[in-house]
Length: 306
Image (cartoon, rainbow, N blue to C red):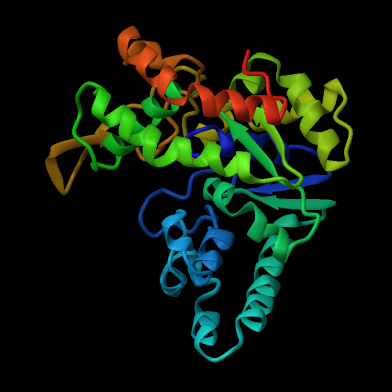
């Protein structure tokens, strides 16, 4: 789910000797720098299905210029091949991309938060594929989304308002929960809070679902490789930050009047950061707006958030 620590969990899983997982860093970076980010494969391919553009699907034309143009040469085939045949050639290319990221490891996984809206479609292309979903306190997600928009200059600095918070809850969080409640296939759900407060137990559960063991020594190594400090260090190719240490601000040299976050979009990586930016009154409003759906998801997937 969006703003829920998907990159972190991916980086931790990638630290297992038998598991490859990507991306382990945000795609955003210095201009001209090639990185493997979220592929958006299933939610892009799903745009061909009628009615799916409303479910956070991306137009197929995106592949003409984005995501390293890995699928660019295949896009025109959507106009000439029968739909199922087109799906086959796209799936073959996607599988090849995943194999490139696999290296010598036993399995490989790719993470894009918007896949939560297309779980059944994923199953139709990859039957019995294992899927993991990361949940997070909606209040922290609102806070993270606010600062993500500010850092990209898509929102001005300022307090988090009730209108902003409830719009995000309505337009994104509720729809994600509804998708999870509709889905009846195989899906392993964990939480950002569980990963933070009981990391070894959470890693053990994740790896067990994927068919591997993660004894304490391996789990600790996975945590080190996927730590906030290591992720921020690798992303900036320089100084890593401790969890809770906020990224520095810088000026855009081409537009000195605007300040924005440093090129590293990973901000703090802590539980309960919302308390620094959201009043208790607004927190109660957010909780009340999402409580029935959130409770249904936590119960259905047996997720503990504390």
